[in-house]
Length: 162
Image 1: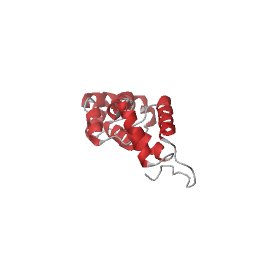
Image 2: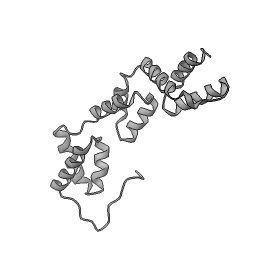
Image 3: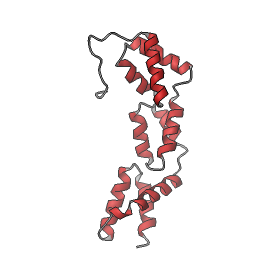
Image 4: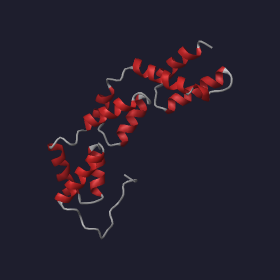
């Protein structure tokens, strides 16, 4: 990845024990995906040691991408649509199959209710005639990762009253 910090060429590699301690320290501060821990370890040590540390962390059940993805979806589904959640999880290095499984429980009805709530809280932003307000509301929800079907349904429900 282009944004990963690279190691200094003259910096010595962390030993297995030090790399494991570093990874445990990271996971003690907040949850990370396997890929995120791997990226951080590779800035400190070589690929062999990093893989050994990742294997040990998985054996200790400290790295679980499915549980991590589930927590992210659960905490952010009240503000973002499925498309945005998928993008967040992919950026964190979660496998596509795990992403799909973690997004399955989020129903279209939930997405519609969330989109309605988000739009209602931000309705003060949309000024102008009905067409301008609809256009701005559509763009607003689309930027937050709601699908076109969900956005259209919400706009139909909210703007049919005007």
